[in-house]
Image (cartoon, rainbow over all chains, first blue to last red; front, side, top):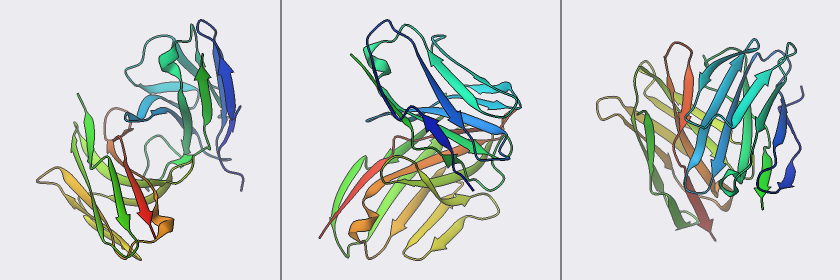
Length: 115
Length: 112
């Protein structure tokens, strides 16, 4: 069974540009969550999607957006990139919204560097 | 504001030592507390603790939830170099739609 797949794994952008990251959850999983990880801040919750609907949103500016498709694949977009957006962006999937077993399945992440 | 705090943020020990990692939380509608291990990129699940399961053990790792003190500890006995990782504590909240928030993590380095 394939795990959570995130693309691209690494990317470098310059300030002002925009970026789109992709996440394919484990087959059958309908919930996808996105987290930003930076040293010292840990994993900061961005948003969570279930059945193409955003159900939870963290405290990030509107430059951060996302969507989920009918096949449960999800994308997140960051517009007008700032240096502080440099981070590891992790996607996690679970069978349903919330975790009856407590287990989120994480992808390897997309490492974004903003110059 | 909901938050999860971990201490220490980093720790260096020698092989064979026993370590205790701490996690405390202030959240609305607590549902469960989760521990994850992150070695390189993808965090992997260790334990889930709830009101009905406040103590878990797996090999050299064990964890206890103190609902009164709103905290949890993760113990690792007889540490090995393979235990070097970031240990993440997270709390799941039973909001309108369940939400999981993470603490900053504890970076553990086990040296030979």
